[in-house]
Length: 396
Image (cartoon, rainbow, N blue to C red; front, side, top):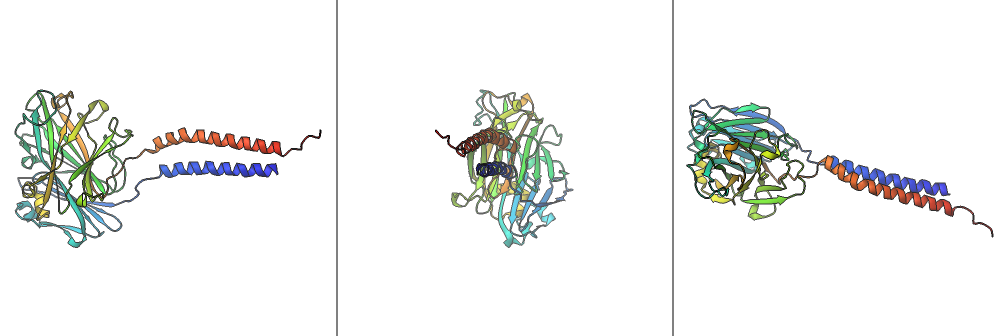
């Protein structure tokens, strides 16, 4: 009888152990498993003005994301989400290059379009921070209009495209943009290691060797978000407690599009408030960045600066914000002559950072082992008591 009770108790203990470790396994295997098939097509430009158009089609089970990246005028990323896995992009190339009418780029069937948004890199601002306040309010030099930059042909590598531009043909210093599109969830190897999904793309921007116009120069990047009824309109800041992937950074900024400022998110641009002063980022090279509040912009002016916006939107609505790099006391740009910053652009809700399997394993071991010891001790005491109670009482 005692052996049977002990066996039953042992089975309960075994079930608890299996449940604990299966729970750990489910935590390890969690994540977004949705995948897309990627196809790239480049529209090269042989005209003296340069500027190319890249189309990346990301086809899912019953929908498609069309990523269009263009350096004709101000560099622009356009993202169009359709409810069809067979939707296509049509480009009337001569009209597109002429940049004088909308409708030269369409997504067909147009009835399949669920949502569209675009990010325009419009201007690069430089100011003399002689008082080391990092307040970008005065002492500005004439702005770099990125629509007037001379852009190199796009360099394609798998699902990544890189383009660099200079304010003059001498090529003395450059501003580069690298677009990466993904077929599944993951992270790139370089900091800030943002979590991407199959519904997002990554844009890395870096300034390399552009001669500063003072010894105390800092820079500000002007971005404009363009959409139809619901452009990106507000920036939400989220706090978290894990800095495993981006050391010392515990915030995420999300520029989102939501109908009537509700909780539903149609599209987003997402970044961590950090930039890096060298191409091989280390913790010592990190510098904080800040964004201004989004402000409404003139859609027609934005359209005039970007061939892609002009071609796709007939009546664009635009919002703009500035991202400033560096804070008081941080080294100036001329300390390394380099600055890089990374953002994600996608549809739906932004990816949410969570603990990695390694961290979950450590936490599970820290909490699970004491629990197992307590359970084991309890089972041992229970068995011992059962054995004691199963013996005969002594006869006085």
